[in-house]
Image (cartoon, rainbow, N blue to C red; front, side, top):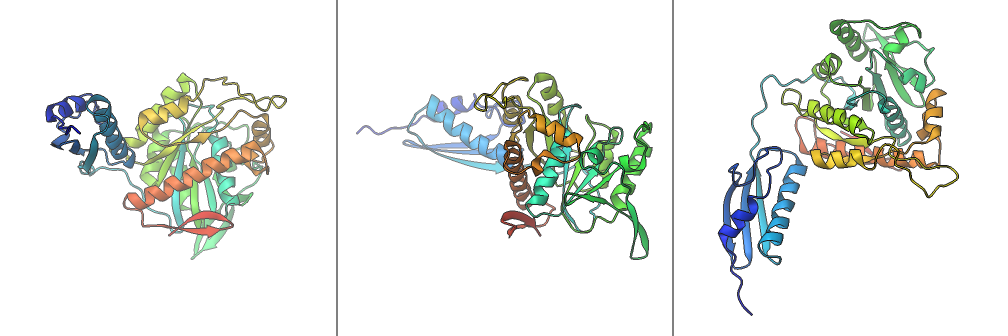
Length: 380
């Protein structure tokens, strides 16, 4: 049998066709490839990247192996050594102070309004509660609070409780979820006309002047877009991670991309746990096997792949979701329905991404999985 001897120059030429994740230059031009060695049909590639995410590391390994197999030798035995040389975090990185008793804080965001961000937040919350977690929602959508309506508590008011000699707000509880919203402190027909500092002060009061108790998860329903409220939240709280909600059409995806970019800025640096695609398709009740992609097919899923962030799942257009939100009972509470199953899958993905984030990235302490009510729970 003829002995195969791979040419190092062929390897370098092949690597010139691969872009380094997040840099825009090819692996040779950027200097990322530090060494290439060949031994017969074996190849060893040493490469250094600056993107610290596990997805970037895995993608680098896969791209190198796939390219060498396709362009040089299909049966090559390849070993890729990826070293991460991430730049030091900037001194002005925004990090808030922790709230005692709250283990994980997840910001739910969307680049634009009308994509179902509050609906996703509410159904994530009740699904987590059904799994046995202690859950709270902070409705930070100052100018359009809708969480009280979705939990059928729009006429409720938080009570005052005495904690260690201090008066604190007690969140309103519904369906096992603790809720605080600016909607509790305004009239239904009253427009909230506040400048950024006033809105930030109101949010800080709901965050730090409330008695949340022990929570496994606090979900923060952010306003649409990127602005003062988002920065205030990042400054106030150590966010564990973020979830971005989008619909499949281009106009929504363009704004969702900006939402992801906001969390990935050096001065914010909040891990993006993934993207949820809402209104993914429509299935008529009389044609349960049919799927109609009204707003386009797999747009958010493709965006997640392009941005190298996890895709958490898709939610179909179902009339019951809208009806359930309007009457104040999140649709995921309905047992044995496609919507309940869709939110179960998405919630499991969110929990898994939180576990991965907390075990891989500082400064959150190490966590472990325990069994609670038949499901996995995130604990200290």
